[in-house]
Amino acid sequence: MKKMILAVAILGGVAALTSCKKDYVCTCSGTVLGVSYSGADTTLADMTKKDAEAKCDTWDFSYGTDNNQSCELK
Image: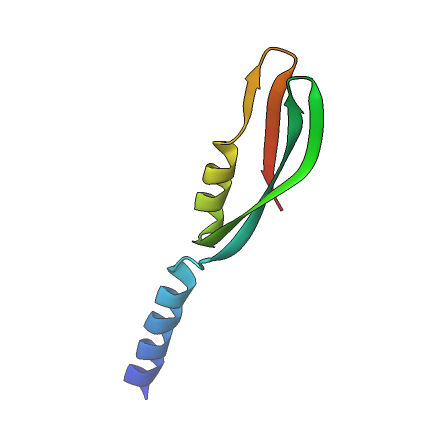
């Protein structure tokens, strides 16, 4: 019985430490050549939340006042 409890505890610990991969949505808005836009959504499939946030952040940019984009994970 003690071995079974130990095995269940180890499996539970491993399951708790594994990353859950799922689909996330990155939404961007900004201004390009003075024209504003919003709601540009991109699906990031089969990623951890940390990886999805990092990918979404790479799409942020700012070049002067007329060209900028800000993205965030929904």
